[in-house]
Length: 320
Length: 283
Image (cartoon, rainbow over all chains, first blue to last red; front, side, top):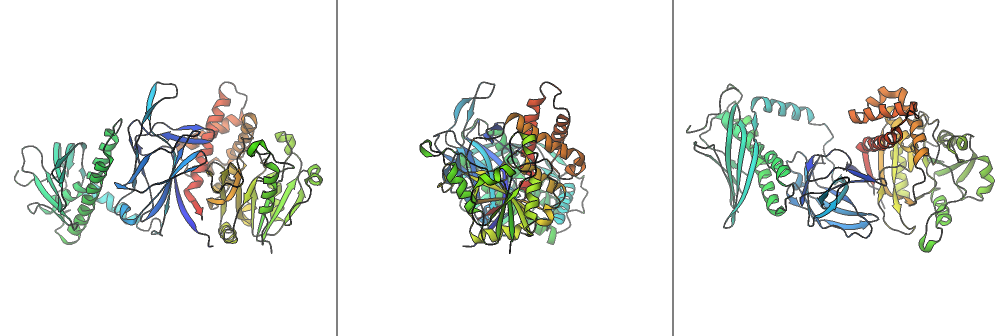
């Protein structure tokens, strides 16, 4: 039998983490962990290898404690989880295919605990907890590009775009609706900015059906901009926009997953959400962001120079 | 030809809790000893002279060397210095040398041994152990906060500064990684289910743990600039500075013992995290 080496990325929950829905780290008898909670959904954002991979979540158990019922999502895709008991741990093994990481700058894991209970917190009152995550290990299933191969172009490109086509999606408030077979997401974006133009409130409506993802964006008092992402992944932006505005709008749409993530971190505390619904919109926004990125690349490659205009000029809203 | 020479210090006896209250230690000890030698793999056990006659017959492929004195005086129980043991491994002429704790059973196929040999020829490999509750257990959790089998090219072994560290005393495994990293040697952490350990209660706590930590910090203090080059971050570096100060003045009063234990634990975690930047699974 051949021996196989696999690169492993280890995320130790004793250290600082990026995400939400976790209590402070604890250590006992050489085992460290963070309790999930107080809500049912906990988020962990980590660097991860591109392409397909596999991983394990190591959960600390006490005595005969049963393996907790935890659903795991990666970038909005629910993963098939194979739980097993290994000594004093529950190991939740999972794998993902290439599409799950496509276009994602990093891996966003959601852990949805079916049950939350109230236990005494060290030195405090009661707290709501789900399960004790000790570490998350990830392994690539295929060879990726050598580290840093395109780092210079990526860093330079991101800095250039941030400087010349600045956007900020602001702070999002979300509400979810059903329209027959379609789903609708209302995003109210506070303190958003497109180019040099700030918006105190910028409402955005997304309507998802089998055929397309339709988008309407506009501040109160102005005609909304409409865009459509069709089933083939092509994004159609308003033709009335100038070259610079078109590029800025594409950049703005590409930034929406960050606003969604920030909303998740804020809204999921103590929540018992519909994880599948959230995952649906997480995937939809990622699809929209990828299409917006592709659209921007085409605009930069083939269209008029969007950098020729004065970067301090306000966003020219059609019909304003 | 010897391709890998492992150094260890075989205890006279081993005691481990077994099913039904029996002592599983003797059988586990025998299984460990039998598991180390293989074609191309030799083992040198370094023991205090008074132990050598009492060890009894050993499996073929395991040689004995008399240990340099001083461990009992330093740590209150007999043993072997790591530098002494590694020198014994180097003396075999093997291109790859290593250290293995004596209660580790190596369930390694020839392919895995070859994979370890090939990679250890390029840099230091530190292997986590799989913890077993019973010798026949198929799978157990890996212990991430310790390294029970360390392999390295002989050139790297000759550069390590192991004075003051002994087998069985905490921190030696962390120090080897830290020393290698500070010297710019490649270090990899390996998880392989063929490196097995029968779980037992922690042997070192309290004063012995703190004394060994102080030894490590005393070695580290003069190399502070090299530590800064590892990119551990400001928290880890501040903790290292605190521990170095505590090591230099261990009796400076309340609540420095507690502080040393907390800070030492965190610093150990920092070493693990730094080493795991290059972590591998060997299937």
